[in-house]
Image 1 (cartoon, helix red, strand yellow):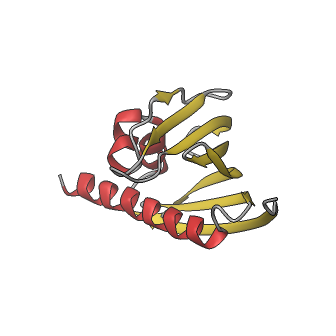
Image 2 (spheres, rainbow, N blue to C red):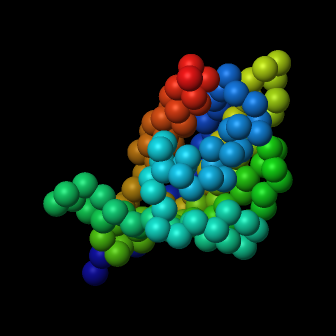
Image 3 (spheres, rainbow, N blue to C red):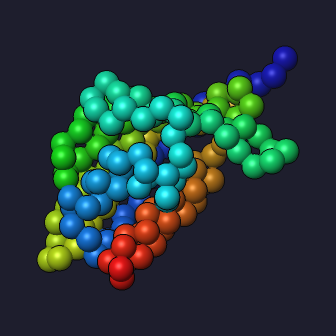
Amino acid sequence: MKERFVKHATFVVERTYAASPERVYQAWADPETKAKWYSKPDIFEFRVGGREYSSGGPPGGPVFTFDASYQELVPEQRIVYTYTLDADGTRMSVSITTIELIPSEGSTKLIFTEQGAFLDGHDTPEIREHGTKEMLNALGKLLEEEAGE
């Protein structure tokens, strides 16, 4: 019999972007923009109670499925969603994510907090935090490129 266990963890990642809170919020809210720095969603309903769903992965690799539900949206200030992450149909984790956008003298401080239940060793908080940092770096790169246009 396979051992079952849950590892609970919370991590916080902060970034400051040389963009307005409105622009940073829009980068999360617009599916075409989000696809440039995250992944292209199969379903994208950016509203309270709405769903974001994407499924895919590298050729020959596992198929990852991200299935989120938006719990709270405060334009230019806060995004809260819950989500599951699966790999090849195996549930890896269940999380709640809070994104806070704080204006700061011509820039925006983003505070990303994730509280997760990581299941049966399929994923770890450390791996997820690393991936989140890479994701937020990609968002920063997009915002920098837009500012340079």
